[in-house]
Image (cartoon, rainbow, N blue to C red; front, side, top):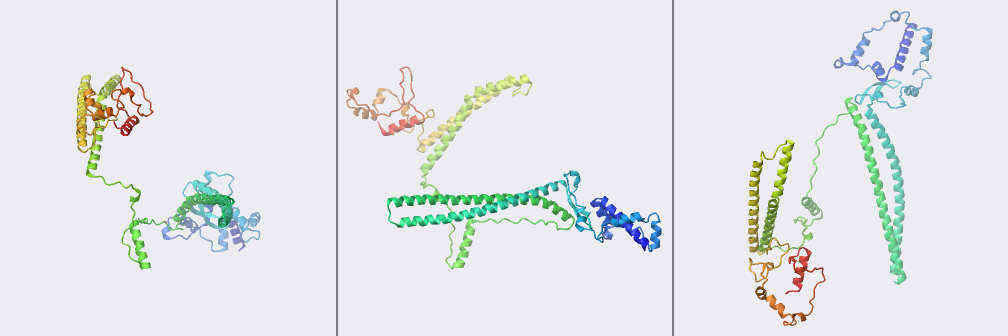
Length: 502
C-alpha cells in the first residue's frame, strides 16, 4: 500500500506541474472527460478518452509497482516537494488564492492576447476545478470597455439629473406659492376703493405676476432639457449593451444554452380612418348613454378658410379661357420669333464649331460646306414657317378673345390706351388715330374741352390746371417721345384719365 501511495503522490505532482505550465484551454482539454456516446465516437473527447482506456490499470499493488519500476518511484526529496503542494486537504490551502492564481491582470492590451475566431464557450480551469470560459475577440473587448465607460457616465449624469430635478421641484413650489400670494394681493387691492395709488400698486403686482409666470415656464424648459439629456444617454447605454449582448447571444446559442431567435412575421400597423373612428365612438356613446344615434358624418371641411368667391358665369369662364389661349399663343410666338431672330448667330456659331473640329481632327457636324449650307437653308425655312404659324395662331386667339368680350391691345404696346365706346371691336386704337385737325375736331371730347375753357377766344387767359407734381422732361424740336408709358408710369396716366375725364 505504501508503494501505491507513493505512485499516486508522484502522479498528482505531475498533474499540478502541468496545470501551472499549460494555458487554460490545455488544462480544460486534459481534465474534462465527458462521457462519450456512439454519436460522439469521432469527437476530440472520444479520441482523448480512448487513449486513456488503452492503459490498463494495475490489479494489485505489486503489479503497479512492477510497471513503474524502481527508478520511477518517488524519492525522499521528491516526497518532500510534493508535500509542499497545497490542496483542498491542506490546512494552509486558500480557495480565493487558488482562484486568483489563474486570473489575468494586463499591463497593456495586445491583440495577440485575444482570439482571432468567434466569441464562444471553451473548456478552462478556474484554479479549483475544470469549468467553461468565454473566448473574447478583440472587437468585443473594445465594445465591453465602451459599455463600461458609458454606464459610468450614465450613472454620474443620473445622479446630477436627480439633484437638478429636486432643486427645480423645490424652486417651482416656491414660485407656485408666490404666484398664489400675488393673485390674492391683486384681488384684495381690487376689492378696495379704487384710487390712483392703488391702481399703480395693482399694475406693479400684475407685472410681478407676469415675471413669476415666465420663471415658471423657464423651470418647465429646464426640466424638459434634463429629461431629454437623460433619454439621450439612456439610448447610448442601451446601444452599448446591445453591441455586447449580440456577441453573448451568438456564443450561448451556438453552445445550446439559449434558444435561437424565432423570426416572427411583422405585426400589421393599423390604419385609422377619422370618419370610421368617429362613428364607432358615437355608437359606443349611444349604447352607454342611450341617446339618439348620430348618423351624420363629422364635418371636416375647410370651406370657412376659403374666400367666398361667387361662381363665375359662363361668359366669364369663356373670357378666362380666351385669355389663357391668347397668352399661350403669344408665348409660342415669342419663342418662335426669338429663334428666328437668332438664326444668324446660331449659324455662325455652328460654322465656327465645324472649323475648330476640322482643325482638331474631330467629328464635324456636316461633311462639307455645301451640306452645311443646305441644312441651314432648310432650318431657316422651318423657323420662318414656325413664326408664321405662331403669328396666325395669335391672330386667331385675338379674334376669339374679342368675341368673348376680352379687349386686346396691340402686341407692340407694353401698356395700351383704352378704346372708346363708340369704336368698333375691330376699329383702330386711340394711339393710331389720325391727328389731323379735322379728325380731332370731330371728337366730342374736343368740343367738351373747348367749352370748358374760360375764354374760347383767348386760350392764354385760362387758369392753370391742377396737375400732379411728377418728374418730366422737355422734348426738343428734333426729338420724339413715346406716348406709351410702361409700368408704374402707365398706371399714373390711367389714374389721371380716370380722375380727370376729358
